[in-house]
Length: 228
Image 1 (spheres, rainbow, N blue to C red):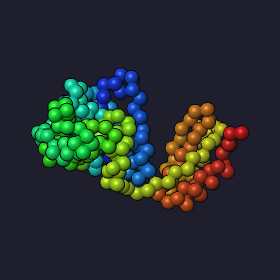
Image 2: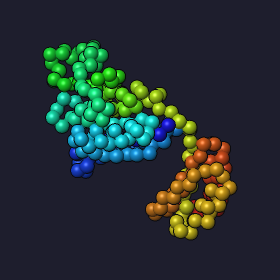
Image 3: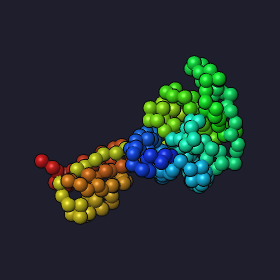
Image 4: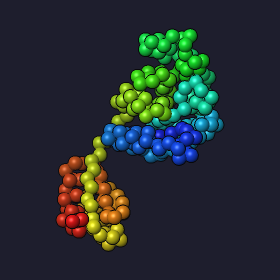
């Protein structure tokens, strides 16, 4: 299963808010064997949301969109998603019923709180108010991290793939000096190797067979200089 993650918010693009949602989602999806192939941040603009979501839903098995849910003027994500799939917005009775169960009266709710694309499956917001939605492989989640995490956990079983295993080898050598051993470990073992230099070089080995990944990491550790 391959997935695109779209985070919506002017505050993310301005650098005023750290995009922890994308990092958390990528980690959880990877743990489930799902391949995250795009992470895109876009502004609170209906046209941009519609264009990106429409493009990605044709290319990936699922699109997860976070941020911009609610009835305020800059909460336009649901409108953009509806435009992407050519649907109108309508008040979702199931979402309203959940909110009433949580103690909110319909009269007290801001107009538009429960408006979702026509035919969408509503996702209850256990940690907040604004509901999420699922339609045509698009999952719309809140931007507030606590709300997003709770909602994703309610539907994460819908995301699955081939489990991958990972081990890390740290080398106290220049990255350029490690090229021969990186090439050899890739030839000897069915693993993917990522190289991440800094004060040391972190070599990340991943594969679909746990024993193979462990053997590759052990082989490589014996052949690099480790930090003291």
